Length: 254
Image (cartoon, rainbow, N blue to C red):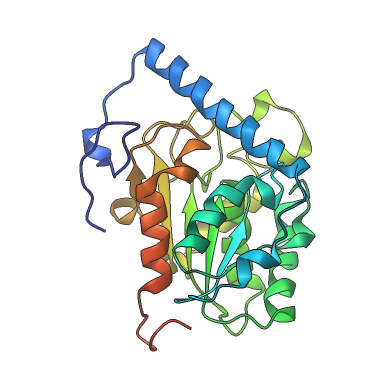
């Protein structure tokens, strides 16, 4: 995918070869803004006035259906701001209630996702995944999607090779991101679905410092720094919309 240069935090894409080393004061400010957004979005989980079925009913619906796959300790409402923006652009957005707050192992959540796609009879699906969600989505594509209901996945800040900082938060849900984890190593060795995944990473990610690369030069780096804030980056939203609307070789999106 062609990238365009933009200053960090302004939206747009940042070419990986043009990355600079941010100064400590910049990293501190980026971290504050990143966590501020994360806290605000987590607070949305307390507001149950918005139902997920409001996101699937779209009178101007177009493109393939979008299924959200949140990250660790994230309820679907964490991705609600993104979902509402996608819905406003005419997309049908689905959530997976069975994920809960996404504390269960990746293997189990991949099974949950596969069952959801079958139960809802969704086809030509675009998965939009954050962090751990990309690992769940890839495993579901490999093991729990025999009829290829999933056409594509766009992941953001997914630790495909693990995170060297996983030890800093010693809970089972986070320790699963250690680079030595057997599930992660097995997933990395499986490359048959990689061509259907667009791996997006932020210009600077405090949780995945080694990056979220999956396909090397085909990956995309979004300019907004942080682990969470890029979910609201206009360029990331544009990329997701384009992925939902771009026809595949087999025909137009559903």
